[in-house]
Length: 526
Image (cartoon, rainbow, N blue to C red):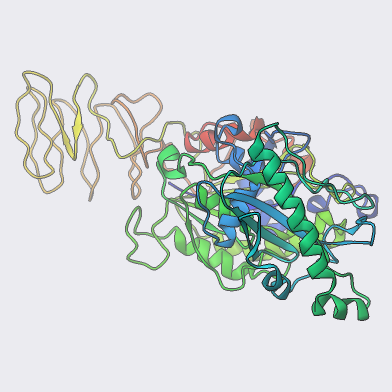
């Protein structure tokens, strides 16, 4: 089974008086979300994070099943990689905002009025060198940018120059340890910020903006310095070849670090004007056969597609609850693109909550929807190993299963020798059955041990919960009798009629930690 993992950034919210004490998700007209919720299973996810609130970086890594203490890395690294900058092992990466400060360096606006065209400003600051350290910059989405410090004796143990607050003096960068490298890095970065301010406030673009009554992008707020380190790839961790479709640079950077392939989609901007239809069609195409590891169809052949949508979070940070509601409805109108997918598990959730009334991230539980799970399915996914009949022992060497001592049989091409006393004939890819086993071969269908019941659909080998036959690995998930798509769940699980924060509290999934969610999906353990 393949997985379509849709993350609506900042999806979670709190009741809003103007919406009748409903959240934007609850107030939105979402017939397609609601259909998936009524036919699937729902619940709540508790975000796992470090610090005072969940950041997008921590929230995503935990959703993908990574231990933040073991695999954590500063967001600046993900940002610059997502932009497409080349980062060396000794480089220091930072994320930044173009902002507006007054003559006393008091922050007027952290985003400079959400300035969109920053390329002329970036060009003016490019390749500044201070005390042997080169500063490399590249534009990200809107007011954001990536910064790389390249030189010797640099440290990422420095403080942030952005406290996420306006009407305060822009913080200076300070060393977080007493090492010469940390003191040196803080000193040269502070010099860069002052020098860049002088260049920016006199830049022709900013003079034009002031004449138009717009805010000048005259200062850079930097934060989350980090160095590149190697993380375990998503494919190695979960045995699934994955791709990513996203507009925001952070999410591209996360995918790149985890070894996911980036699929470029024209019109994927990471803003409210993003082309949802194009992104959804690209995601659908990525999960087409052939799979895995063969890309005979352009962009296809993946087991896992991570589809990120950013604008829900943008509206939340602006406190625009009506905009968030309308954008959720826009997403809902495009969902029918996925409704004819077969053998694909569709998961929809957020990375963190961003209530419009707060305008910042919170640790509120997130609604989650899982659609396409075989009814009553349980099992573990581990590569392409097929279980041997009860009592058989052996090792897998390529496509050959070694037989226990004393077993009789010969291997011919993909023929598996049988244990002593087994009877059967090989026809093409037919595997002979042990004595007394019953079953029929249909295409690549492997007959089941005696007493097992089930039907094979594509790469599914159905085994009831009481069957015998060894271990199940990789694209193998146990199905009930017919493997109905979509599944029907017993009313005792709490059928959800509306995909919302309130309704998902009643769902079968209950409340689970974000770091456990990926494992629960892959083992069908709900």
